[in-house]
Length: 263
Image 1 (cartoon, helix red, strand yellow):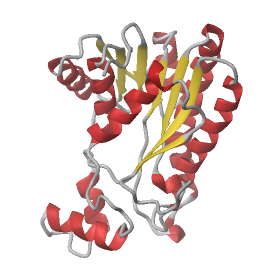
Image 2: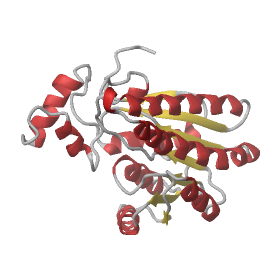
Image 3: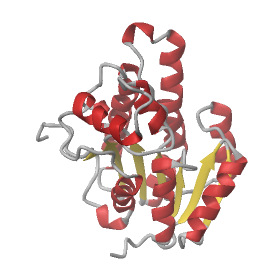
């Protein structure tokens, strides 16, 4: 299927690994001009080369820590116009509620919420003026069903869904859409360490640790395995395309059937 992304410029944050990298790769292969961001020049270079090796021709990396106001300002100064903004940057951990400090709450809000809000604030008005654009927040199924061991993380994911819907209300009658995507547990660079942190046997095989996680931690999952980043990227690429014009203000679930509600 031709997603009609030729000539569109896409910015994907947190895109040197995991979901972000696969989103950037898919958009680039589909013909978009893609900008990847990260805090490590070496990882940026590797991501750009990996995407080019997959057939994505128009891709470049910008070194910027968009979790900070200074980093976001530097990125905005370097990239004045985009058509597609994918706010993917995020951090997560498992931590008992009573041990979540004020600093933890502030850090998670800064990285997971403010990073995307700042960039949306910068690029969204021009999308409305040009009468075309896509803003996509990579939220999580925990935004709808908070996990008791990740409450600070879940709070930020709920906030992203709220921001997304609120922004969508401002697009009425335009060709601009704002949506959030809710992945379930997805295979990524740091997932093994996370799974070990919640496992009864951190020294077990990766397969055994993953199986225990779904059996005990996410028993409602219909998929009963980690989602692959490419499976998230396919949905995001569709939402970024002109073909998705009728999907706006939505929280799109790509969580392997983990949420048991219909709506």
